[in-house]
Amino acid sequence: MSENQSINQCAAYCLAQRFDIATLSKLISEAKQVRIIKGSLLVEDHSAMSVIFPYGAVVHWNVGQIQQNKLHQLLLTYAENPLELVEEDHFTYTLDCAATRINEDHIEVESADPYVIFALSHGMGQSIKLASFETNAITTINKTSYLPKSLAINGIIQLQRHELAKIRGQLFLTKSDIILNYDLLDTPDFFWEYPEYEPFYAIAAKYLEISQRIDVLSKKLETIHELFEMLADEQKHRQSSRLEWIIIWLIALEIMMTLLGKIL
Image (cartoon, rainbow, N blue to C red; front, side, top):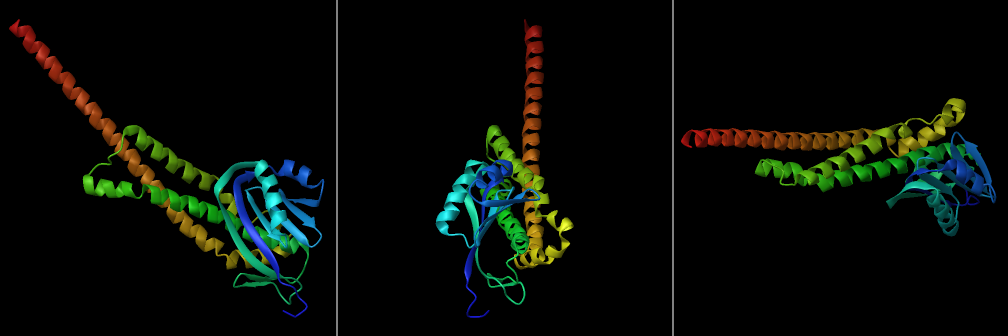
């Protein structure tokens, strides 16, 4: 990097489960230049750029904090299921470098071409969305980690039936939310049409270890599935035991009625 090259700020956020891209495109285009690229928005304002992805993530390049906050307020107005815990990641970057690479959270970009920025943003957007999935999975596992311990120590899970059903529902929602959105972590369709930009996406995806993290997330989902199945078995066992006792009491009642009939 030469002395004449400036260091700028880059930030990625996951704010919600999903954005209404169609509505946002109309609103933002009233004040700024907007390109709709394969269902995502590339917002340009002089030397600043923001890339808005439909899956609730946004990546800012050289956008000041005040402008970021204003855009976030607008995004959240047209968001589905805003996150209580906002995921974020921060980088620095320099333009017009000899080659594109990322080292210690500093991005050297060989060109100011908006599509290069867009390609890099795809990797960063997927990474921050993946971070949201990771947080959700870890939180769910931690909240329910006492259940297998209780089963191992006591032989039963000491919860009421409705509480068990509620936890099963939470586990199912966590698992289904991630699985239904798993395709978001595939190579974006944009690169089928513009394969020359895929190497830039690959640089970001490799640096942010997206592939390895997906493998780890898959194992966490297996853990959630096992917890779900364990609770299902516990509910079946309780239901079976309840039916057995009902049958026993009915038989006992029938015997008592028979004996009383003979006595009387």
